[in-house]
Amino acid sequence: MNAPTQGKLLEQTLTTGIEEVIRRRRAIHSFVPGPNLSKEQWQKLFDLTALTPSSYNFQPWDFVVVEDVKKREELLPLCWNQKQVMDSVAVVAVLGDKNPHRRDDQILQQFVDGGYFNDEVKQTLKGSIDVVYPNEERRVEHAVCGASLAAMTMMLVADGMGLGTAPLIGFDPKGVAEYLKVPSDYMVVMMMCIGHPSHKELPRQPRRGYGDFVHWDAFGGKA
View (cartoon, helix red, strand yellow):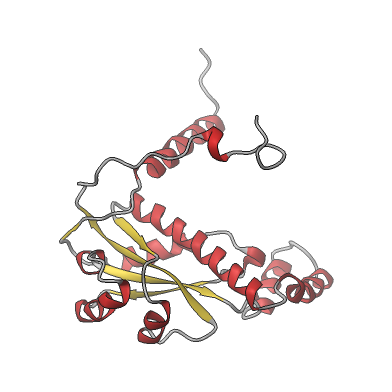
């Protein structure tokens, strides 16, 4: 039998690894006490989260990390008293940026500097931003979509680091935004608890089958 090429071997390893992480990752309901994350661990988590794709590479996400126990106690009622807020080592507010123009010139110039396109194309793209995001509704969609993609990346990275995460959408967004002094250009998309999992989760709930949610050519189309 011929040995696999290096490319095929690498592809096989990556495929196996990502499948393992996806199948292992759970929304954690039970955390156990453990040390806070080090500065290096936080930086690794967010450096990898930053690789999340986004429209125009605008990266419409920011994060507010709350480790302090007293501050989490004050956040608790705003998060509907969900115990993971206190049982984890930190809760992270995942923010969506509703202003896609914030860094447009800087980011588009990076494309020019990297040889992706010339300055003429850059100016055309700058002009298209108002077409793509013409109103508040579209900007909110962009913020929620981008921040949610980043949150999923963060959950997978955290699992790979031996940590557990619990994404919370049950919270008072206005109250949390006021408490964390979030500017009006941003919205709190979700709260993410991060900590040490107890590994006592119940079996995963059944998911819909392939034939139940995959449609071909049009909604309702079968393979």
